[in-house]
Amino acid sequence: MTGRGSESIILDDDRLAVVSGIIGTIAHDFNNLLTPFLAYPQLIKSDLPENASSHALLDVMEKTAKDMVHINQQLMDLSSRNEIELYPVDVNEIVSSVISQLHTNGLITPGMSLHTVLPANLVRVPGNIDCLIRAIYNICLNAVEAIASDGKLEVRTEVIHVEEGCSAAGMTRKKGEYVRIAVSDNGPGIPEDVRGQIFNPFFTTKKGGNRRGSGLGLSVTFRIIRNHKGFIDFESKPGHGASFFLYLPIDSPVEESKQSDIKLSIHDGSPSNMVCDKNKILLVDDEKTILKLFQMILSSGMPGYTIDVANNGLEAVESFSIGHHAVLIMDLHMPVMDGQAAFFKIEHLCKENNWEMPSVVFCTGFAPPDSIRGVLDAGSRHCLLSKPVSGETIIEAVKSRLVK
Image 1 (spheres, rainbow, N blue to C red):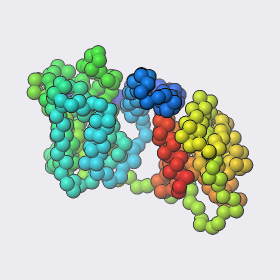
Image 2 (cartoon, rainbow, N blue to C red):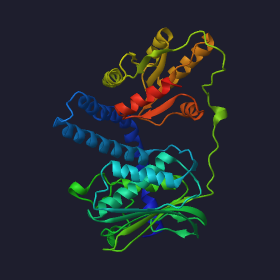
Image 3 (cartoon, rainbow, N blue to C red):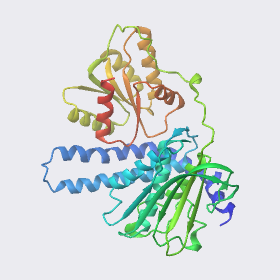
Image 4 (cartoon, rainbow, N blue to C red):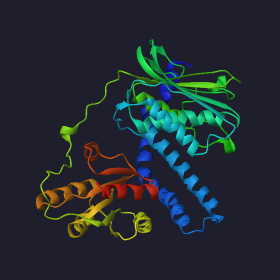
């Protein structure tokens, strides 16, 4: 494979611009549509006897919804033009999280052998945990799908020195020290004639029931590792498995936080004239199906609480001004007034009138704007949930906000 071949396709700005436009248009609606498929099975199961045969059918629905979420996330990762925020991360913890996900999702069958080599005190590298989890998971998923039910998989981390050159994936290798994540399997290997295509979006050699994705995993991983200033390498022999190597530079600069440009939600410590009602929760979303679903989830999982609803940010401001809810679950992208504007309007009213500021759970299918990221980065009592979201996650987020 030439160094040009793989990057020329991944970096094709015209093709990525088209994909970005499509995904940007449909992602929010698609995530809203998926949310009921994740949450309703849990609600239905809570009303069924424990031995009801319908539990198995609902489990299938829930698993299918999770697979759809995974594919949608792959598309958004591939099309995103947003710069990721890097901070010191423990690669071993990330690998352990991926291994746990593989077991939870039933991908490691009893006959498979999974071996990990994770040395203690591995140096931290600049990274983004969520992105790296997806990148490593994609590589491990490919390996699991390549091996038989009694196959072998190994995941290893180590610090390694690299000289300049070009990797088998067509990426530039810069001289320096790296943390390397190696994922090896004893599957059939990669055919010589397709090695130049495996990082192309939508390319896959999997057929039928063994195909879980849409050929996006390697191209998404390529983009994530490139955004970490790292590179990917691989080696394979037909009939003797394959090994993929993810290299993360140790000395890559971590972006400075733009806190000076961001409005932060910080209480001045003075006593409030009006405190929030700990028994009231406000749901804010322009999608009526989402409002109804979230209301059912909270009414079922948190009986005794008053659950009010608002269809946009302006209604949320008006409702909070009257009800002083302790927690708001608020979408960011809405007509009339979006969630970001509503948050800062409520914050302004609280400061102006010396009211207690509520905790806000932002719930969105898009990446949050910098101003909201700044609020979250400030270590405040607010948090962000990415749609689609399960009922358990919503309840846990609200309960944890009520005790802060």
